[in-house]
Length: 320
Image (cartoon, rainbow, N blue to C red; front, side):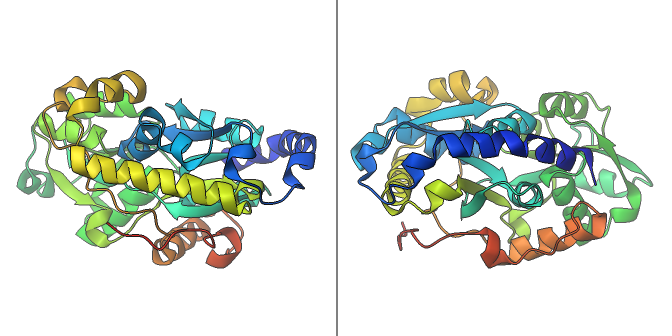
């Protein structure tokens, strides 16, 4: 099994220890949201994080009756270590991660999907036409991650799988710089890094959203997922923040996006944020495709049922 899985399994004992320490709280069952201690939600530096961050900045968590701290991660490895050691109650993740977590017997569930996208972008000196004429093209990826999955899926849909040569560059800023300098012919990036690449002249080869796939998810600990009052409060705060962003855009808060989430100054005057959707269940079709890909790659020995690792009972029936 891959190194990532070994790291997860090696830390499970720590998670279980932390879980025992908090068992008295868990046994209290569903309570009023305001009676709980501060919850920590991990986010990555991408557009999917913005509603979680704005819910904190604008007081929507407080209005919903929950005390939430947003913890920003630049590295998925750091995020996973925090989750495994009991230092997060919830986190943004992706469908590969939830399978890795369950392989390691971590007590977590995916409870919702998050907004965001993964795009394969050409280097600035290439158009789509010139890229398609290349006999071989180096593409920057992060191996055995959602970026790797997105790259492989987009390449198959575009009919270019035989011509691309994936190059493992885990650090996204390094991948972006190598793309901009022409050391890579293409790279797969999340937003807003993909938009940064396009500002410099890169063109879109393909996106996950083009094919209707949404691998980004929100993960709750089992204890949080089963807590009706707190779960509903978090979802309400998220929806309030998403609606606020759709109404107001990023102009008034862009300084904070740069400061806290690391957004680029060059995107300040662009429409980098998507139109956010009301929080909704993870996409079962995306999960099945992701699960099959991981199984075929030997990244997991299990074929998980969607229902067994998701919990969506307390999601609101809301739309914008």
